[in-house]
Length: 457
Image (cartoon, rainbow, N blue to C red; front, side, top):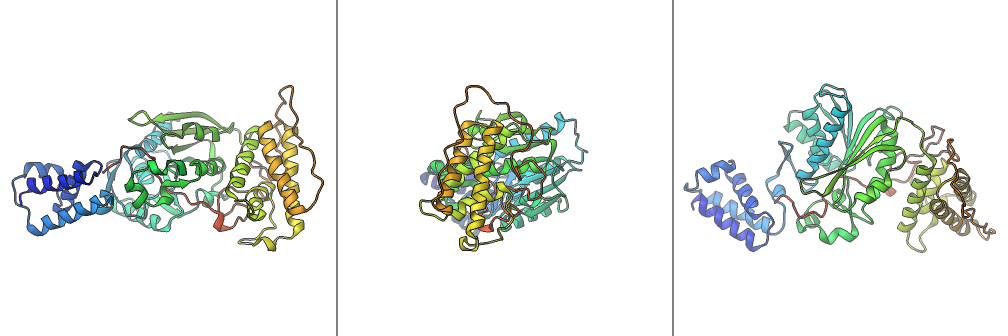
């Protein structure tokens, strides 16, 4: 069969099966079989294709017709002009993710940091390593880390580093977000935290293409309750590891601009949103303020969001332990809870102490001028836990009263172990070192694809 006829037949099959970008897929599959480039296909359209290669080509076309992405069939995807190996263990790099790379380079230039600067950059949820290795190709003296919770993904990323001639440029680490970097050797030392995290919420799953839903690892793209959970964990961790004046750069979903911006409090400045080529908000960047002291209002906002999120995750009748370990214990600096405990391992006194301390923080927030809504939410959850765990205690009245004027926010930290202080028992967000939170509670984070219609074939 002539090359032109083989290509035409493959294209017709893909079109009949409603494969997106059918023309591109037909060309890429034939190029993979013949080990040639696109120019060869059209400059040698009359040549005869050997029968065994024709058969192989139509087998790949049939496989693509089932929905399996072209990149998983060929094992390759181009990103930033580099050829990356991709497997079903990693999300397929998308062209729009290149905007995150561009943003890091632009912010480095804006800060007066040239290509020879010794920048320290962490790519969170590195997946195939595409962001980290793209930055390594542009910043020859930068020190780069690629973090991912998936060990198979890290294997693929390491192979890509070797294939691209950069085996020593990026250090790949198994980590739940920035958990491995919440250590005294890393705190306050990083110039950039960049990430394309999972951000597809349950309400948007049906909008995601079949190729993504059925074949790409869900841990890499979403299936979250709301879609913003990873950002809510990542931003506080980024504050810990970034230098004053350091940047966080994240890719966002097509409809997540307001959600993500709401998670950035007073600890950040120069917050900017960059669109992709289709004009859709795609990348958010923010600069850590030079002051290392977190504002009380942003602290209270974090507390309220975390409490509300954890409370919504617990079904009615579920153990109170899960709420306490995720909300009260980390924020109160409680260190008596060991790894992988059961509820019965905690004495009633320990539980009561945790809840009472959370309740005291709620009252302290009011005194320090935290927002009414946040303080009321924290008061509600701590009061509920007091009733569940501590028995028939007399329920105090809400400490929150209508304010007739703006209360000045205090400049000192609130309570014990509040995020941003450096006291003993400082809680960590995320997994791993987060006040000895059980490993089973850690959320996994790698890359994800938004429910965006324009996807590579």
